[in-house]
Length: 119
Image (cartoon, rainbow, N blue to C red; front, top):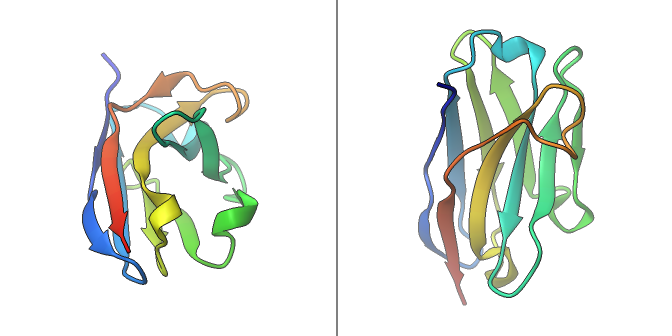
């Protein structure tokens, strides 16, 4: 059974930093595109950051560019999201996702971790 387990969420003041981790029990982790989504109350889930499976290329939602960094460690089957200069509008449940074809259509989801940024 595939599991994606997020950790690292919590409460932080505006301007602070958090690092999310996602450990994946995928036998061929390096073959999957990986991404982080978030969902704030009353809003749709949105893709925040993605890292490709082959060349490790990255892509970010406009509002987090320059503040968030996604990375992956294929030896540890783990993907990270370093979040700096956090803003109250970053408050959401953050989900890790793995995709075989395209990150816009994930194959597997994590259970989510809450990130709350206080002003």
